[in-house]
Image (cartoon, rainbow, N blue to C red; front, side, top):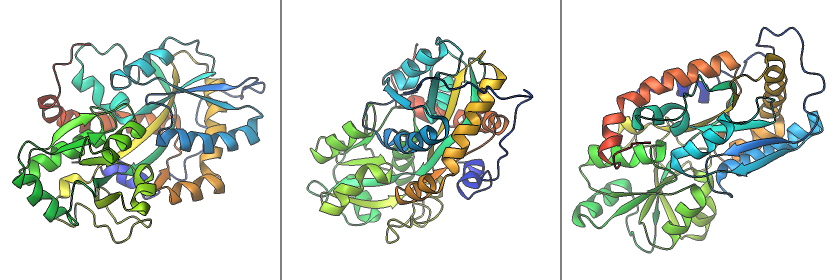
Length: 333
C-alpha cells in the first residue's frame, strides 16, 4: 500500500506548516465568540474524544472558548458528515473527518451524499496513529503473530476480528491479514473504539485492530495481548511488539488519520482564524507530549496541504476499494 505521504507526515515532514495560509488579509478578530461544536463520527468515549478534549484545553486557553464534542456515529461517518455539511458556514460547526469519511467512502458508496473537497473546506489535519492487533487472552493462547495465524487456520470460520468502523484502516488491516496470511477471520464492525474493546473483552470477537490507546489498560491487566503493530517502526510505548512489516507482511503498514473540516462557504477569515487556533493547540507541548504517550502523532498542516493530503489518500484507497467491497454488503447510499 502506497502510504508514503502519511509516513512522511508521521515522521514530521509537515511539522513546519505555516500559520497564515489563506488569501484573506485579516483574521476574524471576534471569532470565536461562543463555543465551537466538533462533530465526531464515532460513539462517545472513543480515543478521538480524548484527543479532542486535550486539544480543547489549549484551544480554550488561546481563544477563551470551549470545544463541544458531539458524537454522531453511523453510516461509516455519513451521519456526521451530513450534520456538518448542512450546518451554517460560520465556523461554529467543525467536522472531525476520518479516513473512511474523507478517503474511502467515495469508493464504497455510489450515491455518497457529500463530496469531501467540495462540500467541506479543510482547516488542518489533526492526528495520525498506527494500529495494533490485539487478542483476548482468555480466548487466544497465541503469544506471537505466527502462532495466531496457525491457530486461526486450525479453527476455520470460528475467529472474528473487530474494527472501530467499516471501511476504515482497522477494517482494511484485518482484510489484508486474511488475504496475505491465507486465513478467514470474520469482520465485525463497531461504531467506535469503546464497543469494539467491550466486545473483545467479552469474547464476542477474539481479535481487534485498534489504536494502542484503546487497549493499553487491558494489556496492563493481562486481559489483552498485542501481537503486532501496523506502523513502519515499533512503538516507543510497546518496544517489544514487532511490526507486521518485520514479520513478513509489508502491505500491513497502515495508519489511521483524521482531519478538521468546516462547511463549504465558510469565510476565509474564519477558516484562517480557526486554523491558527487549532495548529497552535496541536503544536503545544502538552498536546505533543500526551499524544506521544498515547501513540498518536499531531499532524498540523495548512488548508492547502490538508486538501492535497485528502486527495492523495483518496487515490490510495481507491486501489483497495475492490477488496473492501468484497467484505461489505452492497453499498447503495
